[in-house]
Image 1 (cartoon, rainbow, N blue to C red):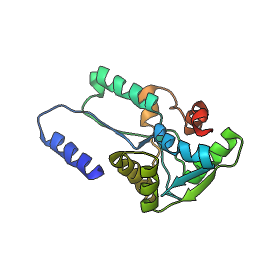
Image 2: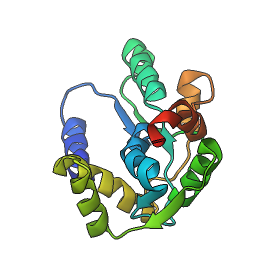
Image 3: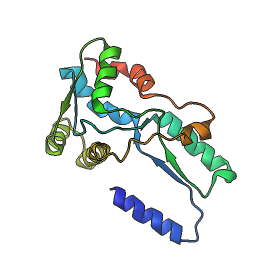
Image 4: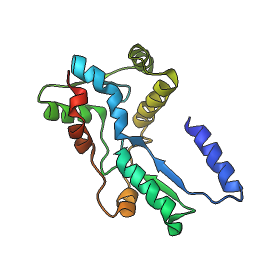
Length: 174
């Protein structure tokens, strides 16, 4: 999936078109795909026991995109965007434990196990592959780099994963 993005970006760079690229790593809302497992079994499964992810709140990403669209001085650049922190899945389980008031356990799973579990939970195969690619990219150390770009664009600190989880705690409860 990522290779295809680079091919498109290379094509844009070679064209006479004006373009601006936003490179977010992963949106905090992607954590909602684990909500059913957390609510039903108090487990947070992932194929990334050690990999860090610098989650972005979709509201911050949307605000940055709108700003870049409105401001011609911001056009023609590539923006590597991240949230303010990078977390491992075990750390996310710890946050959920605190927020929910009961133990949430991280469970390491192989990519095949994750793929099967997502299929059982009704996640479309193409979306399951996207989510799985985020986990494997995290484990490979490819999406855990925190930047200040989003902060610089917004003129404020981006929302944290903890804030997102608190706001969406009901989704992780039975």
